[in-house]
Every structure is written in C-alpha cells, then in structure tokens.
Image 1 (cartoon, rainbow, N blue to C red):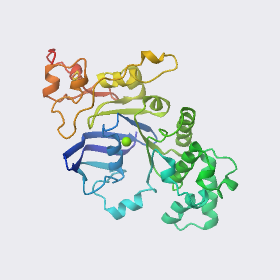
Image 2 (cartoon, rainbow, N blue to C red):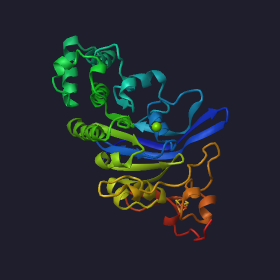
Image 3 (cartoon, rainbow, N blue to C red):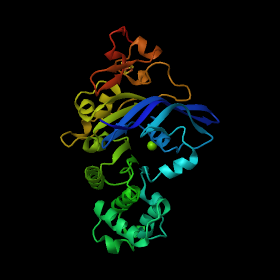
Image 4 (tube, helix red, strand yellow):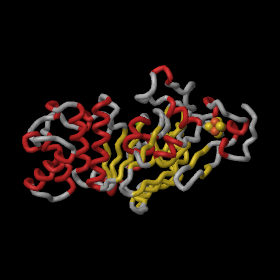
Length: 329
Ligand code: SF4
Ligand code: MG
C-alpha cells in the first residue's frame, strides 16, 4: 500500500514558565493512502500536538519540533518553509476542529465562505466556484444547496454547521484531512451521522483521514487503523480489530473498559484510576507505570521496546517482552 504520510521519531517541546513540557516523545506513525487512522488518547497525551505538527501549527516560539521528520508524499514538512506550508494548507492537507462555529465567519454567507478557499488557491471563475460549492454541499448531505448557499451560519444547526466546515475543508480536494475531535461538541446521534459522513466521503473521494479523538466509541465506526497515545508516546498501534478484539497494552484495555456500550449497564464501566504522567519530568520507564496493575520493577526504570505482534500490531509494554523480570514495583 502506498504511504501518504510517515512520521519518524517526532519530538515536540513547549517552553513555559514552569519548565519544558515534553509533549511528544518519539512518535512513529504512517498513514496509507485512502485509509482512516485514528489517534486516540486522553487530553494531554500528545495527540493534538502530533496532528498539529503535521500542519506546522505548533505555536512558536514556545512550541518547537526538536527532532524528527514528517514526510508527506515524500516531502519533509518539518523542513518546509512557512510560505510553502501556506500553499499546502487547505489544498493538499486540510484540518477541521471541534467547534464548527470558530471555523465559520458569522457575517459571511455559507456560499462566500465555501468559495473563498477555492478563489484563494486557484484562478477559478465565480460561476465555477459556485458550482463547486453546490457540489460540496451535496457531498456533505445538505439538501437544497442552491438556496442554502445564501444563508448565514446561524441559520444552520450545530451538526449542519460541522457539515459545512467539512465541505470547506474538502473543496480544494486535499489528499489528507485531519479532524481533531470533530464531533465532541455535537450530541451523540449527530456524532454518528458525521462519522458516517466521513466514511461516505472517503469512499467517494479517496481522501486519507487522520481522526484525533479521546473517544474510542467514535473510532469503532470509522477507523481502519488505530494509534493509542499515552504520555507523549504511541503505546499501541494496530488495525481496528487488533485494538478492539486483541488489545495488549494495559492502558488500551483500560480505555476499552471505559467505553460505554449498548449491551452494557452503566455501572460496569471502569474508569482508569490515577492521573497521566507529568510531562515536565517524564518518567524514564513506561509512562503508565504509576497507574498499571501489572507494573513490574523494570517498568519504572526502563522504557519497554516495541514488540511486533504481527505486521499490523505493535505494542510498547514489558508484559510482551520475555526479558522482563516478574517483580511487582
Ligand atoms: Fe504496565 Fe509495565 Fe506494561 Fe507499562 S510496561 S503497561 S507498567 S506492565
Ligand atoms: Mg486536543
């Protein structure tokens, strides 16, 4: 399969008054053309920082990619100039965020906002731009697109607004769409509809998608592959079935047990006790040691190596490593 994106040994730091936050600590990831990769983790796990790095959206000078490469169609985005990056954003790679309202301008019609991106990046006629805008609204499932073009964002529901934002992100036909918690602000039924929409759009356009979310339930619907992040690292990655049916990392197993399911009573849900590691002074060993029921002496001292369970499935945990001494911490 053709890889559209390859992240290699990415490290991102933020300088604050309290010290340096090591937000991303050696992330390796790839995305195949036309697939959906979900990056899952709690807030502060480094998932948004990783996806923002792809777009060079790390706020400088406090934030900095201190090591690593991000190859998109063979080009290293870490080394790409700001000017070149502006030309890539929205055209080759698009991004959508949690709150559709922040992405939309309340004073402009939906039609103007949809065609804006197109006009910025190409010399398209007004008629053609309008045609494309109508086509995009249809693609995202908005009926009567001709008349809807003349309306303002407040005339749409929250779910419809997120559909418009998705249409805006796709109008220049990007190869890669990054969606960071795209449904978190929406109610559960609408969330499901938007996830269905991502699948439909992918089938129609072949766009590759990175979905960033804290919600494994959302992932189950759309992801082809899943990367689970914890403490600035990817601790387990695999096909959707590897993660949902054969999870190996105690944190992934904990996450799955905390996802509500229809066939489950609320009181069986088990939240993961404890708090994530302090990334001002990250643990030298496994970042999950303090919360892990299986922690051994070695876990606190030495970071586990990557174990390759199959071609698709990798995990960083001493339980998978025959060298681990079975001694409780
Ligand atoms: Fe638990 Fe040790 Fe595995 Fe970390 S390496 S998840 S502490 S068993
Ligand atoms: Mg985030």
